[in-house]
Length: 377
Image 1 (cartoon, rainbow, N blue to C red):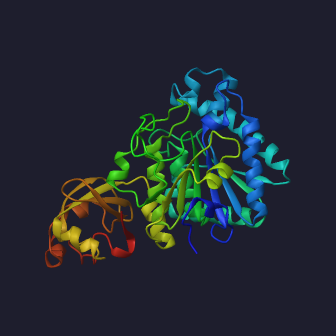
Image 2: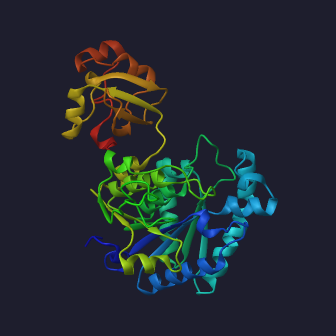
Image 3: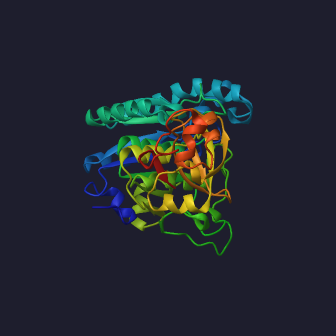
């Protein structure tokens, strides 16, 4: 059983576990106060989903916006990293209280998880997050998740909750993610153009689909845009997870989207195993390997990456670190965990297996990136 159309998102047989992502512009008004009436309608939909037998995880923005209003910070709290961290520290209390109050009115227990990029990039910490989510859902709670902006830095952060929602969906073993946006879905061009056409179904995000997106948040309040939503769809689709973009500006937005069939549904292209799905969704690479056409062809056939096919490398990395694998044109083909540190990798670039031992001073490993630790993009 697989999700094939928007109404399937409300079918517990097709979609047992679902992630809702709510952005700042939907949750917080221009005055810095929460939009309680709108949020109450969404909470009603969460309660209805649970009554159907579905389990729900919420990824909620809004802490920075709420905190900035309380601290009277300029630019919505995003004038500097220090302002954003301070606003998040204050606003996260208000955000948690808001969700706890509204879910509690439906006799639903809310749970709070604040995650950083490293919590989901590190395999051991990722598994810990997955276990916590599983236990909370089994206990009947609704986890409410946000990036921990009070400690996240510009260099090590998701930067938007769209990709965080897709990664959380992987960890939670969800069947679908719903990104509530300020537009009906993905259009083939800027939706402000009169001839723009809504795409109801996308089977695989490719270069043509990316070309339709425009970056940036129209509200000026959030940090995401259509580009980040397509990146989230790519993360989800590699793990066999469907992702929908629907218009959240309406009351009870899920009911409107599924009832009127208005939105964009991204269908998963494949279902990688749990470890490869985690690896394919990693966002922070420690380096890159540039490979020749022969190696690119071998990877496409399911082979490991051998040193003979690597023509150049970038970055400083240690054995076991994630690296990007690109062709000579710069296109990302794959990513995986490297078998050598940067110094040793540099010594064997382009060398055959017979030549590598002399260059290294020890017996070489079977591959630079083994196929079991590699995922095609």
